[in-house]
Image (cartoon, rainbow, N blue to C red):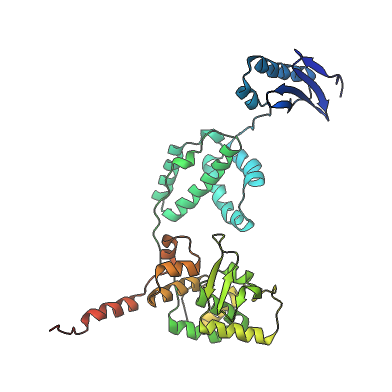
Length: 353
């Protein structure tokens, strides 16, 4: 570096080069301090060192601690921030979420992409969502767009690209909870024989425990205690451990699987849980026209448990639902069970003498 001779300001601040940039040292009540001057230019380094010296003269230690010459991020347009900053640097979405959000982000950019990042307002977001609602966009879809905007602007504020998050002032819509298709007991028993052995065992585990597909796929034999009659879900969706007692039917199935081979404790119980195609084929063979996925058996488990009289508190703990509201999305008492409960009112009463 040319002209890299150290300099000194008022005997208080010493400037020197380190690598390709200028740095300085000075003393405060806390002892010797080192600070990057964030420049390769000596004249600019001297001016910044003078700022430090002036604050030391004034004993303005708070201002000195906040002194920062790092270049401020340039926001540019919404689209520039989204594709050059947020997605490559600050987005913590997994690969699956990124793919799901691609089309949504493209539509958001059609509306806001050309605007300055700080030029998008809460009123503009509300007006756009209201327009989309008038065009028939559901409350759930509006919420997904709003959630994406909230994430983008949260990162923008956190990393200094803008001062406020306009999406934070827009309230999510109340979503209608739609019941999922679940199999009744007869349909379930018709389905099982039509499934290949591995898929049958995976489906039975989902239906008898309410475990999520990812949890079933991660299950190790070390997590299965056949003596105690329980298994341990090690990595749950809400980042907590939970114990799931085994039904006699599932316990017999796991006993059978363990007898077929002596697995290592770290071995996966099921391995792959990708049974979508064979499940669809089995449903067709069984004459069942409902749209059922592996996750549907989690809904089926919750419904059966509630109808059997299990308390919501216990069901929430077993299934790993984060809140009673989330449980309500999964467990619905079917009409037949409601009729059976109401029929109790028709039972003859015994007169009390």
